[in-house]
Image (cartoon, rainbow over all chains, first blue to last red; front, top):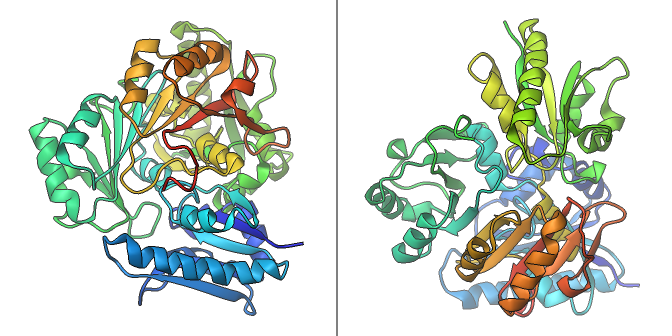
Length: 233
Length: 233
């Protein structure tokens, strides 16, 4: 019997937003894997650190921050092979994923390389979107409303069309794109709520015109076309 | 000092998908509130039952299954006033919400009635969408892809336009709309993955053409325009 690859969503950042199932699986885990930027501690690992056994084996998949696909694909190839060696011994490997494992995450790149040879299971987690709406205490959608989730990396024309066609919008992966998105929304006569590091002690919520020029990766914009988060429902 | 209204997302159904924070808050809770269909036990309450103290006070907000808004609004008025009485005594009230508290939920109707008088806090939870993609082990979105979330209650013309304009689509609130949605997707030459009661012991995943005529409320459709959940990434 080979082991199982488990994609575990560890939630948006507050260690208490890990699920009970996640905590139980981690307490008995013998090998974990995670993707992290080169030279930077893994955020996903830091979220669950208190649950890990000291004798745990760790597979760290180092990525460099680059737009090129090839170096990342090589890192996933190497990481997947290291994971495969553990699975072949009959041991499970828990892959730690920020937020939810299957929502814009990197888990799919590992699963794609391993799911033909090994069983894959996913334990869902709280997404950054849920954390952001909670931090802002803002209901995005109700009843018959359409919700559209957009990566800020898309070109302006695509963003504009999508925003025009939807009731409520989340714009993710802001980073260096924030000034461009702000200009676009201003041009569209829309306001937005900016949420940074939702669920973390230094998390904050502000109107878009108060937001910094360059935002951290863990930031997003919430847009509802009504004027009030509650009373327009 | 008045108490705080806490909207707590209890997750999609598996009691282990409650967050550690949710479990901690519930263990010391003195009053909980929840919305439930008349004569039916509350699903949200059943998810967290093991964490509740026997002396707990419960505010049940009974809704009848109707399309009319007025009876529901009256029930929320009455429920909000019952909650307000507890908050005025300086005690917190935890409102249990299936999935996430601010994602197509009823918590906003209570918050709308109470947030001008009392502090409101939200503890996010795992959504039914995350549970469904986990159950199907299917990555909905990656990189620059657009994700659109659609209630099945929308008219065909709106659904068609939204589906045409997006990369990945989730259709929620299927219920009696499933045959109509199936006809629409067939006409659009699209397939979909049908997920029912995700994360529960009787949860199941199948291709849309295998799905039942009438689906339970806790079911949804996942649509990706590629052919393979992994290899098209």
